[in-house]
Amino acid sequence: QKEVEQNSGPLSVPEGAIASLNCTYSDRGSQSFFWYRQYSGKSPELIMFIYSNGDKEDGRFTAQLNKASQYVSLLIRDSQPSDSATYLCAVKGSGSGNTPLVFGKGTRLSVIA
Amino acid sequence: EAEVAQSPRYKITEKSQAVAFWCDPISGHATLYWYRQILGQGPELLVQFQDESVVDDSQLPKDRFSAERLKGVDSTLKIQPAELGDSAMYLCASSLEPGEAGFTGELFFGEGSRLTVL
Image (cartoon, rainbow over all chains, first blue to last red; front, side):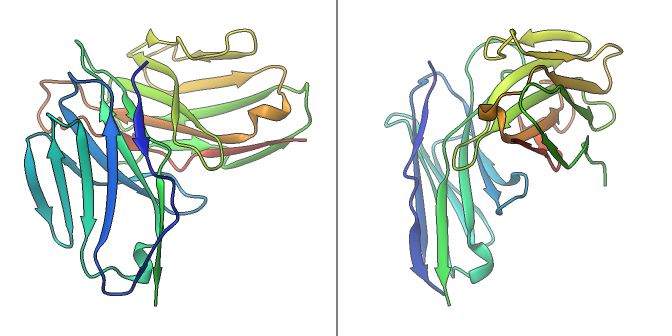
């Protein structure tokens, strides 16, 4: 059973601070990793994806991947109240073909103004 | 911008009734997924189609759930009879195929169909 683990939170940070969201996964063969943001009652929307070990930056967001430790994280710099949402970590399964994404339970982030 | 269309957005039904959800993926996306998301949980795959063929339905409760994509375009997910535990958001998503230009592995989600079973 392929698993993706996240701390459900809530994670509370003050406005302007850095929010750090973490995720571990069980499928060592996984190659693609995704962070989705989901506002209450809405569907998930992609923030960014990462394939290679190291950091990938996009605006205020930085994804970090360590395949040896089976660990992926998302940093949000200069957090804003509008960043308050649930953040879903998703891992594309190893194997042939178009394997589906396996999602964690999500971490609820609250940015306090 | 191309979108995944889903309907209905909201459905309230009584247990033992039948319900159906419809999804139209982004044009040209061969792969279509149905996920179920219970409140407070992450999305869980119910069924994956490639064109009109089922690729994975191992997590679909086949005694009450069925899914079809007859012409390889739009899809319907049916529940009969509905149970209280089926209350959830039903998410449809589609994606490009590996090797296609622009493929990232990203799933493009529709707005979802929220089901409440009373």
